[in-house]
Length: 481
Ligand code: GLU
View (cartoon, rainbow, N blue to C red):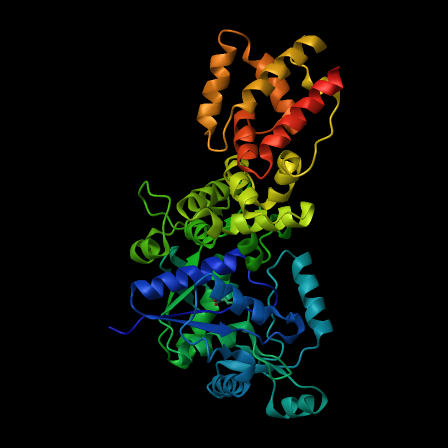
């Protein structure tokens, strides 16, 4: 059996996004599973859409995601293989499978408009197909032609590994331009030539390429080459079936790494289309290599569910050493930037609390700002915040004074549960809110925050934390006095 060889073939017309990472991941897993090779090819023949820095971003992203191709020091760049594409276009022409076309962009534009008006599919009308040698000679003196493939009559059948059999009547296919007038190939011809020349056995790519594949299959036929097998991956959409957009932060795969654990991203992306058909949701990289199977990729749109992604990220953080996580690094950066605090002890006390409350890792900044800044800066609030139901000022003062007494006896190693028990014993059958609400408000200055037990537990472990507790509760009493 021939060795499996796959390639990831991004165009440097933008940064690598989630969809790109998914293609690379599926390529990588498929190659590893079959002990094959995984190559990277940069499809950079469209010079007008080239984005500066895109190749570096793609390489860096692959590296950081652990999807390093086997030819990383000798990546194939299509822009360096122009002579080969020209040679193949010439061969197709000499064998009657392709022809020169001199039509001006204006003419093609008019044609397209007319066809659209008549509700016909836009298609070249073969105006230049039967030009005589003389005519061609004359035209060549004026302008450089493009080379188009001559789609034969008949039907083309794609046996897709995911979508199954897709038949296309060739009359619906356009005489695709293979070589542009500047001598650069189009995606279609360069793609086929390279897949053949590098011995690619399986083409794994997004389903947006399904309509182009019959043209590719015809090119393989015309050239007498064996076509690789094709596996088209389902579209990634939002829960409302709309395409992921820039606003969904999907436009830069590197950005994800600043907010999420790499294991969680890989785990989540693997599930975008692939259905393990078991209850298992958390997969390590090795488990993915072991269990991944193209036959279990769905045809239905793969829904990018940000809630599930965040959930999975939390699961992965809990499996790691907290201080080694991207989450912790980010927390550290935010706290340092906002309050100039670098004390690891403070960070480590707060991190589990933040983690238990985070729902959206993109919005960690806001969460910390809104619900945790009181740990680092004295909160400002109105006296009314301290009031539970219809308590009078005096009742609140009494409640806070007894809470203050209790906190004085807490030790740095008193656990959250123990603190809770101490307070519950003190409250007995009375209304819990009458003690806990004013206390929590005095400590945090917030309407919504972690529980007073969690807050006390953190403060107690911090340098001068016991002092802070006393100061905050006393300040609240002062507000009411
Ligand atoms: N350059 C194409 C892309 O970026 C590659 C498609 C393919 O894998 O054939 O989507």
